[in-house]
Length: 238
Image (cartoon, rainbow, N blue to C red):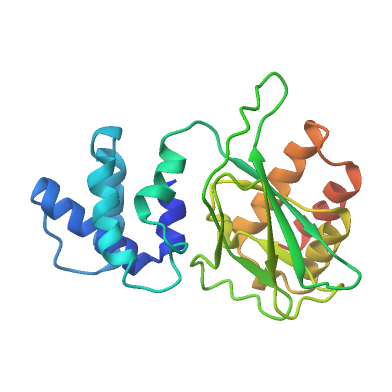
């Protein structure tokens, strides 16, 4: 979960909050902004993080996240979005529903708790941060949040600029979000074709998530064989 917000809020903003938290909570000071110390302080916060002091961490992050427009949903704060992850079990499955005729730029995102055989679906929902890459705007270097699926909303429509029926849509850049993503067969084919045509563009984390998720979805009868077979074509190119 911390990794997700590290990417979604952006490294600089997130680490400013972490350094402030470590200074006020433990008296630890990191004056340098070198990558090593950023990673070290991130590991330190992970090792010390607990339910007992999550409120202090959220408040420290809030001080810096609120300074950058667009990182938080309107009228919502860090405590609200992050506690939706820390206060309940499991993680979401995000189903992407595309419209290939008519308004092709309209996409519906559905969230539900990811459960497998023998598990009970408690109808839990989260504040889900998302971002996406398309054929016209891959932008994999930018992992900051582009929008949110609100908690208590099982379905959320978004507009993806300049998305045509023959363009791929890939959610969750660098697999930063702590959730699984499921597509329809046509979009799986569009994604796998794009990876084969330009494999160096796509982060290995995204390719790995696509393959792992599709295999899991097949095991639990969420998808049929064609999407997985489509994705398996990329193994010889990535």
